[in-house]
Length: 174
Length: 271
Image (cartoon, rainbow over all chains, first blue to last red; front, side, top):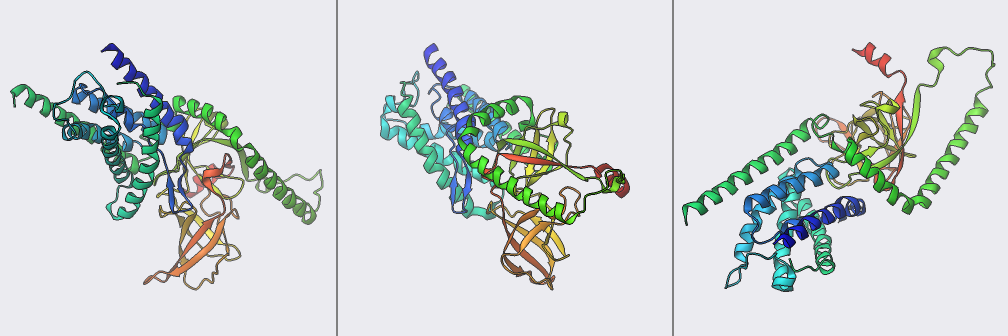
C-alpha cells in the first residue's frame, strides 16, 4: 500500500518536470500554419492514479497539477479547468470499462495489470477528452470549431505516443 | 444506493463544480486584466527554473544565434558608415542641446521562457526593475518587433508578445505618411493585420511595413514585415493589409528592451 503511494508521488514529479522543463520547450505551436506541435503528457498522472483513490482526492490532485502546469505555461486556469474535468470524467470512464468481475481495489489502472488493449482504450479516451476540453477553454470561443479540432488532433497524436512511450519505460505494476 | 454513497457522490459533485468555477474564473479574470492577477512567470521560482532550463537548451541553437548576431552586426556597421558619411564630424567643443541627444536606449536581454502555443502569447526576459525596466516598454529582436512589457519583478520581466489579441501597434507603410493599427487575429504566427489605412493609399505586395513612432513605445522606422495582400473593407472605406512578419518569434533568443528617455516627459505633457 505504501509502495503504490510512493510510486505515484514520484511519478507525479517526474512527469510534471518532464512536462514543464522538457516537453514545453520542444513544443512549437503552429508551424508554418498547417501543423500544430504540442505535447501534453501530464494527464497521464491522473490516468494512472490508484483505483481506490477517493474521487475528491483525484479532483484536488487534478486541480493542483493543472494549476502548477498553468504557472509554467502562462495560462492561468486553462490547464487547471481541463485537468479537473478530466479527473471528474475518470470515474465515469473506469465505470464504463469495468471488467465483468469488477476491479481489484489496491492496484493502479496500468497496462501491466490490465493488458495493453484495455489500457490503450482507457488512455485514448482520457487523453482525447482532456485535450478537447483544454482547447475549448483555451480558445474560449465556439466559432473556431475547426481550429479546436485541428489542435486537438495534432496534440493528441504526439501526446498519446508520449503516453505509450512513457508507460513502456516506466513499467511498474501500479 | 446507500445514504453514505449518496453523500460521497454529492461531495464530489460539489468539489468538481467548485474547482471548475475557480479555474474558469481565473481564465476569465486573467483575460480581462491580464496585467495584475497572475504575474507568475515573472516570479522568482519559475523564473529561476526557466533560466536554468534555457541555459541547457541554449547551446543547441548557438550556431544559429551566432549567425544572426553576425548578420545584425554587419547591418549595423553598414548603417553606421552610411551615417558617418552623411554627418560631418561635430566640433568636439560644441555642446549638444538635450533634445539632440540619443532618445532611445537599447538594453540587451535574453528570452528565458516562451509561450507560443495558444492565443495569448508571452515571453519572459531576464531583465527586471534592477535594470530599471518598467511596464509599457517595448521589446524588439535583432529584426522586427517582439512585444510590450506587462509585468516586472526584480530580475525578470514578462513581455506580452505581438502575437496577443490585445496588441495594437501604430504602424505605417514605408515611404507614406498614413498610419494604421497593427493587430494579430490569432491564426497564423507569421501574419499580422494592419487596419484603418485609408482606401486611397496605394499599396502593393512586398511593400515594407514599419513602426510609425506615434505610440511612444517603439521608435519610428523599425521594419515589422512586408505586405502580403491588401483588401478593401466593405462600407467604411478603410483598407486592411495582411503583413508577413520579418521575424520568427519561435526561433529567437536575444532581444533588446527599448528605453525612451523622453517617456516621462511626454507622459507628463500628454496628461
